[in-house]
Length: 408
Image (cartoon, rainbow, N blue to C red):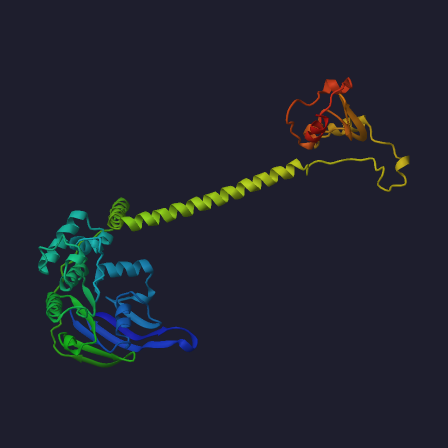
């Protein structure tokens, strides 16, 4: 029964003149329970083909079906679900998380599958024991040999069932003895019913597979079956369920805490950078807002909403002498308008100011009691004159700091 079907598949990289045709009209079918080795020189396209089968990359054109479903029409979430349920990956460089022990590394895929904590730990221990690592379950990756780390990665690939095992140069970083151990494990998995797809450049390693597919310059040049030992054994399905929100949140918190504790200095420096960045942004924004408010306040103090009405004398108007000057009653009439908040008459003259034995020349302005509101002024000390004092023409004066200084 065909588990994987590839029809007229092409893959391009780059654009324009730099565009490279990596895979050229690939046609390939892999039966359920088969053990296939994809062999070829570096740059032949074998790893690209495995990435497309593993839903880690997409084809430029053509069809790739896994268990009857076309992967190129799937959404990102659907592809993620397919990888979780069907696929297990074994990499040349293991890709184990250094902060986690062997059991935690193996159990990691089951977190996303919704398996509860106790079931994850039990299954991870079972897989590690099966692969001869029963005494290494609590060891970190740096406490394991290369062969042991690769066996941990194989257990991780099997955690969610791993119906299809994709192995990219699984023995490339191992010595011959460890490499033989890994190949023996892959053969055992094949006999149990797993579909194995192994990428390698070594013909001796490829000879361990039931079928060899050779790729050269992006094309299949050989597809040869060495043994007819396709396994139809039904695999035991790993029970998974849709993860609950709170369980996901709790597991995420545990993983984040573990990562922080494993790299304390990096976490401290990262947090320090974030704190400095946020503080800088807040300071700049606050400074900008403060400057904006100060500028707006200064503009308001300039009286942008204040209108001065003058009689025109001295502005070159030849008819100014024929025009009746503004009077107090005009200011009162304006003050009664709905759109006017306050009004004041104003008249300027130059005069000599005498205080005690000191006399200075200055500008004297006669105004009403609302003058300070109209101009938006604030008194440094003392008080402004009242309505009653204006009516009684009281001898009350408000001086500026310069006049105060001149008069002593």
